[in-house]
Length: 170
Image 1: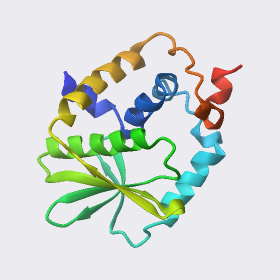
Image 2: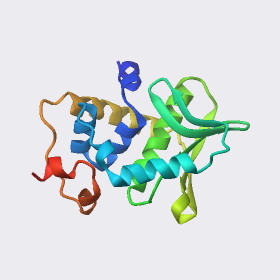
Image 3: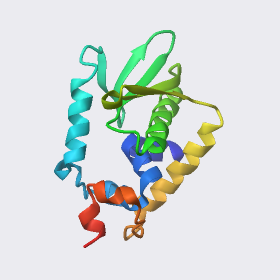
Image 4: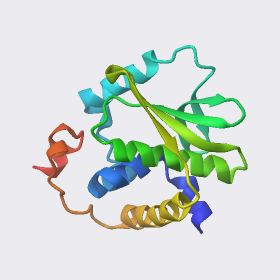
């Protein structure tokens, strides 16, 4: 059953699960407000304008969309982000991509999160102990998505910048 769940769950859903279960529910139930968010638009522009020369950019594998990969002795997942504010969600998104690539039999053990505006990058190392955590998160994500109503508002400082803010605070 987990394989079927994996084929439905995207990297952004894993990131939303870390940040906000309500945001995850809205997004997964086709209530997608990202196109109205200036921050999301800026993030897309940064991603598109950075690393233009990369050969394997915006790579789609099954239901995943990875910013780009590098192929050396192994595959290195690379994600481009606007800021480090939600870094934990970025880390788990990259780990999820690695998890899925490994399940396809591809040699992938690490990733890099790039923060071009900050001139910083973060190396993400995948450990075998991450697999059970990801599998548990996938089951919980599936449960949240199937709920009849969205989870409660979490009321965190970063909510004000969220593209779903109006849906939560009306």
